Length: 462
Image 1 (cartoon, rainbow, N blue to C red):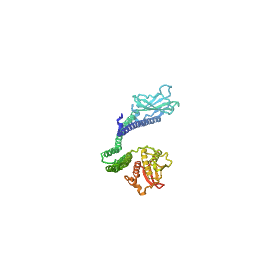
Image 2 (cartoon, helix red, strand yellow):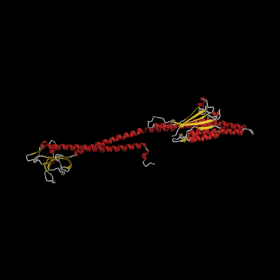
Image 3 (cartoon, rainbow, N blue to C red):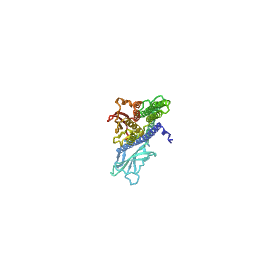
Image 4 (tube, rainbow, N blue to C red):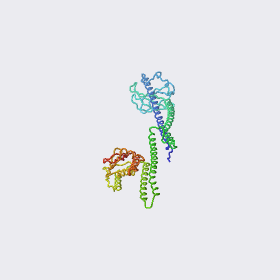
């Protein structure tokens, strides 16, 4: 049993994978968007401080003694005049001794009696830097500074500072984060509902297939009925093909049983009548032996046909033709040794293979060769070749052959020429059944020597 029960459910697998992916995507999107918005807000805040610094620089003037002056009335933002309003400016002299704190000369009224404390910084003339510092009440501030060389004497250097309280900007960021989290949560809920609907709709064909299987099991239908998506339909078609194959096996088995019963009925009736009419020293032993042999042949043939009909032809089977054909030719030469027939197989047959069981190939070729030997006058020939996916095996004899109008008749189920002409008919029916079981066929024609030509088409193996 799996340590993770949810892995046994396709629905839970799909939902679990979807929920995990959605959670990671939404959390990642929240983190990325909040970071992006915060950076944007702080860039805008710093840009506003830089604009205020430019305004302060533009309002800077110097008196006759070279001291800096600011016309406070020209500063447009009213927060400059409100104590601790969150926006401050300050002007320092950088002409002091190195290492000493710069002297504060001017500052905004918003600083009241406090001063901005910025770290010592080496600034080129006109260069601008940014710092994080603390305000007059200990609050965190963002500061922008610039070095300026102007006034009398010409070597005087000044540092202009503008600082602002970013709490309003950070409050806007916090509000955005809250709205974004709520929006993403709502979006996540909608996506979860969509995932549930998608799984329900996507797995609906499986529930329909389950209902079709229940109807099949309960005997309400003979096949899986219904309309299924293109991804499921091949499975339905294959399953219905298996059902058709099973029906065919059952039908053939019933036919074989009927044929077998019919075939055994006559010899057994003859045996019974002979036994009743027997007289001492009569022909009963020979007659019994003949009819028992005939009954045994019929029984073996029909059992072979039943086995062929029910045999599952598994993929990947391969039977080499050459050794099977050689063994059958040797057997036929011994079986018909009294007729002095010439049995030959045309070369080459090496490398040719049948995609099926060796016993089935022996059954089909054995019946064809036996029929050919019984009908032949002097010679029986075998030719084999591969044509695309098919293996063509042709057995020719120089006997009287079969008239064209009778060829289809002798291949029909249940028609046996051995009832009117010994040695042919039933074997051909067995060959037809076996070949059709593999998707092949048996066709009859005229041999080059004038006799019967039986061409067997079977699937070839690579």
